[in-house]
Amino acid sequence: MSAGAWVGRPRGALLLAAGALAAVLGLLAVWVLGRGGPEADRAAGPVLPRPDHVVVVVFENKAFEDVIGSGDAPYLDSLAKGGATLTRSYGLTHPSQPNYVQLFSGGMQGVLDNSCYAPGFSSAPNLASELIAAGRTWASFNEGLPARGSTVCEAGRYARKHNPWFAFSNVPLETARTMEQFPEDFSTLPTVSFVVPDLCNDMHDCPVRTGDTWLKERLGAYAAWARTHDSLLVVTFDEDDGLAGNRIPTVLYGEPVVPGSTSDEKYHHYDVLRTLGRLAGLDRHPGQAAAAREITGVWAV
Image 1 (tube, one colour):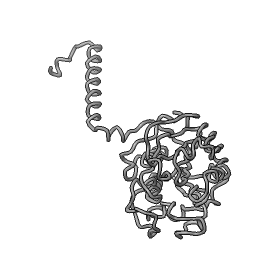
Image 2 (image 1 turned 90 degrees about the horizontal axis):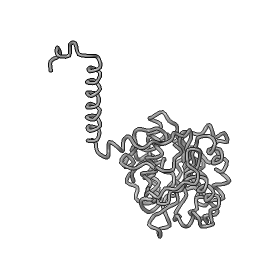
Image 3 (image 1 turned 120 degrees about the vertical axis):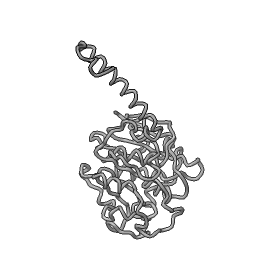
Image 4 (image 1 turned 30 degrees about the horizontal axis):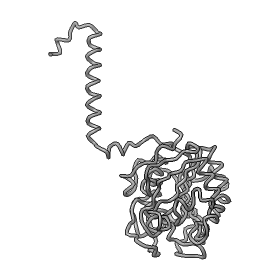
């Protein structure tokens, strides 16, 4: 139909034709976007909250059933009841150190064992570098670390093998703080921070109850504060005890979480890493976290 054929037509007919054209274009857009496949859908992702602060605590070498509901971790059980429990959360490998590196960067970066590598040997993207690039803030709090930014391999009950940020040249050393530098004013915490207990309090060399007591004493006040200040505590483990298929406890607690919720979906460290990035509003995710899934079904959104 020529343009001149529209002359003299009623205004209603013109509007109807315009509406039909818009509908066709809309359907075409949906089809084009759909051609992107799962990757395109994954890039958009589900709706997640944007908490002001996220604190992640990583414990050591315990299977799910050794902790949750075992009677040896009453405080963590209370967090699970008041927060969210991932019933099928898994480590990725053995031993410890590769799991930490995977949880932080989305890949092993060539780390296959617990050896003390040269600090800053990798420039691969990681959670901290992506947070910093996006204008967010980051810090780690390392129990037993002799001094802020120290790259020592061991010191008393401190072991660098559980602190993966030291592997990366794009993570400023000054962001590695001692546990004594964990702030009393929680509103001054970074967007995302990791807390790593020493070899006893992380349950590596000491019983589950020791780590559970430490969690209550050192981070119980933050957990209570997070519940009313749009913030989140994530408690997870690097790996299991080698006897449970690498199924580990992971508990989420804070205002963004539906109290008493559970997820039976299977998640692993790359899913947790991607979720941490999404909670901080990141568009890019390091390594294999780019193809991982967000944790869903537990958020109060």
